[in-house]
Length: 82
Image (cartoon, rainbow, N blue to C red; front, side, top):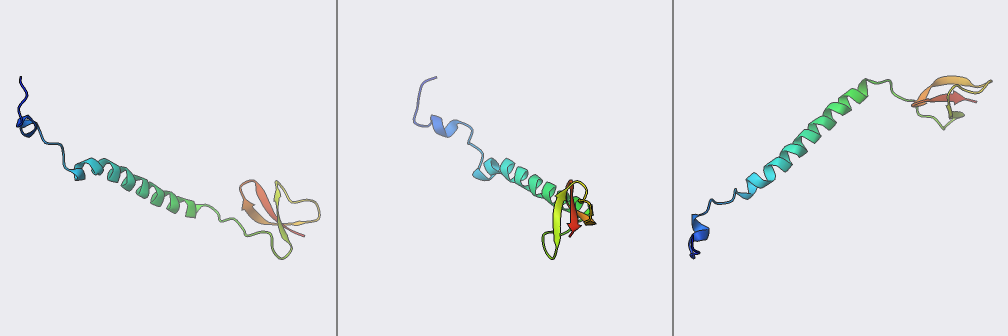
């Protein structure tokens, strides 16, 4: 086949730019829905307490002897009162 100035016209055209960005938008949409679903599942867990104010502190494991347990402040930590 010999080269001609019209050879570029006879080839199949490339897909429009919207078709090139479609996979990216699909992935972005899936990640957004996954994050939305994960957020609703996170609300079902028991909420952690706010510690570190008015005589409270976070301690790894159980509270030290003589301190009162108030609840969990984060994973593996207890919220204790002096």
